[in-house]
Structures are given as structure tokens and as C-alpha cells.
Image 1 (tube, rainbow, N blue to C red):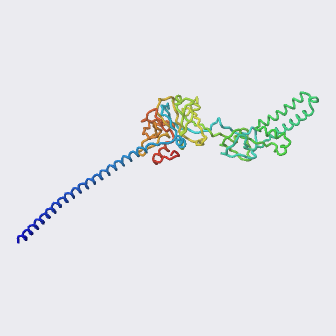
Image 2 (tube, one colour; image 1 turned 90 degrees about the horizontal axis):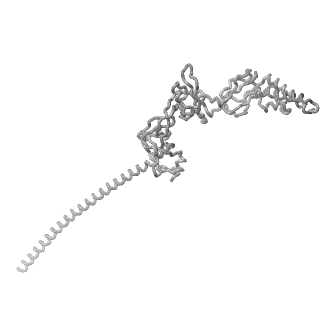
Image 3 (cartoon, one colour; image 1 turned 120 degrees about the vertical axis):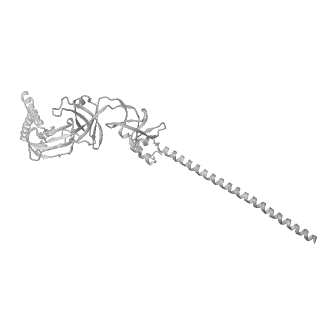
Length: 407
């Protein structure tokens, strides 16, 4: 019995020990689980922090990229190919200007008229209105009784001179020889005065060409190159001496006639600058002449401006605006108007070059426009700026891709 009691007590002690161990093990497990969750939360927070830092870094990087995109790096060859010209901004004297209506007229110094010098009948027209001609081109063939008579006189005088020459000075007296020579020269001069060219006169006395030559007919030739702007006549018409047949004008340059009041005309210098403004644009010109008299009806003074017209943008009879510079003004910072473009928000910008050769947009204020120049503020003298090709630079800046053979 004693043994049975001892065995029971031993079993109770063993059970109690196992229960205590289980309780202690459970506490450790719960403690370990809390620590695990704590570590996990810290890791999650660390990951979120790293992600936020990464996003901030990415934003900074994009911001840096936007700043970089505001600068164009182009080689000198690329700038030349694109028509971009860089110049140092310096004060210029533009002076004051006045804008007045004006009219385009033909440059009379580069024009000519074609008229007969005797009564004649139109046989055939060779050129028409608006056609371009070169010096020596045939214009019109005429018939004249006076020319026919002069041709007969030339033939007689020419044959007489030939006969005298064949006889020789031993047979013919010096006086007779001289008379024959003078008669021949006078007959030739008469035809030349009628407007016949030397080749036409020589053809009259040439036995080879005389048979094909119509007696009394002659052709008027163009005395200059240019464009025919007048030809008011018809075939078969009787033309009086001095009647206008053709007017030929060299349109490479034209006159712009502006009318100024007396005070403004007095302030305009000959050789000064002017700008002709028309529907298709503006071009620079030069003041060529100022009339010395005042128009009795308008009480104005005509100012003649010489403008290049190689591109044929100006036509005689066209009305335009003439901006004329009056005297000297104060030095101002100005650039060609093409150097300015508008930014996305509507501000005026110009492209300035930094020390590294990069081109960046710089906001400026437009003060006023004088001819093809624009007076600006907001940028310092001595700055290197693009005075041409601004639209190209703006488009390249907008694209963000600047590959024009420089990469």
C-alpha cells in the first residue's frame, strides 16, 4: 500500500511539472509573436519610407530633366544648317519714324519707251504685254514710206561710192570722191535716225540679204531688258511719230512715292532708311530723293524711296505703307523682329547663349517696332542672342528632341 501511495504522488508531481512547462512555453510563444509583428511593422514602415524617398528622388530627377530641356545644345554646323545666327546684343540708333500711305511706281531711270520717229504702219507684232524681253529682241515690224525713200537713197549712194572707188583716185578727182563718201554716210545716218539698227542698215546694201528684204519695212528692237508694261496698238494701225508702242521696265527695283508734310520732309535725310510694308511682309529700302517743291493741291512734299524688287513682291500702281526714319534717335537695344517668338503662356522670348554655348529662352518686353526692328527690355547689352531662326529653336525646344545631325 505504501508503494502504491508513493507511485500516485510521483505521478501528480510529473503532471504538475508538465503543466508548468506548457504555461511557460506559451508565454514565450506569445512574446515571440509580438516581437515578430513589431519587426514586421518596422520593416513595412521602412519599405514605405524607402518608396516615398524613391518617389521624391524621381520627382527631383524629372524636375532636373525639365530644367535641362530648357537648354538647347547645338553644334555650329547645326546652327548654320538651321539658319540660326548668333550676335552680341548692342545698342543701336534707330531714330524716330513716321508711317504714311505710299504708292509703288516704276523706276523711271530703269525704263524706256519704244516709238516710231516717222509715220508708219504696223506690219507685225513680235512681243506682247507682260512678256520679258532682252536687249536686242525684236518688238514690232513697221512699214514707212520715209524709210523706203531713205533706203533708195542709201542704195544709190552706196553704188556711187563703189563705182568711184573702182575708178580710183587717178581718174576721179578728190572732190568727187569726197562727195560720194559723204552722200553714202548721210544716207546711212538717215536710216539710223529712223530707228533702224546697224545690222538692218548693212542688210540693205548687202546683195545676199537685199532680195529677202521687204522694201520700206523695218523692225524696232528692245533697247534694254525688262518687262513690257504697255503695248496699246494693233496690227495694221497707222502710227504717228512719237506715238507710244511699248514701255519696258526693269522691275528689279521700284520707286515708292510717299507724301509728307513740310516739317516731316525737312527732318528726313537723303540716304536714310525706310521700310515698305505690304500684304506679304516688310522690306528695308532707302530714301533716294526729296522733291524741292510743294504740291499745290495737297501741300505735301513727295519723298521717293528706292526699294529692291527682285522677288517681285511690289507692283507699280500698288498702294503700301511706308515707314520713314526721321533723323537720329537715342541708342536702344533692338533685335530683328524675327528674333522674337511667343512662349506657351503668351510672353515674348528671345534665345540667349550661355558660356557653354547652350541656347535658353529668356523673357523680354517689347517696347516698340521700328521697321524690321523691335526695341526690347529685360536683357542686358553684351548678351549673345539668336537674331534669326527663333521659330526653329522654339519648335526644337517644344519637341524635346534636338537631333539635327549634332548627335
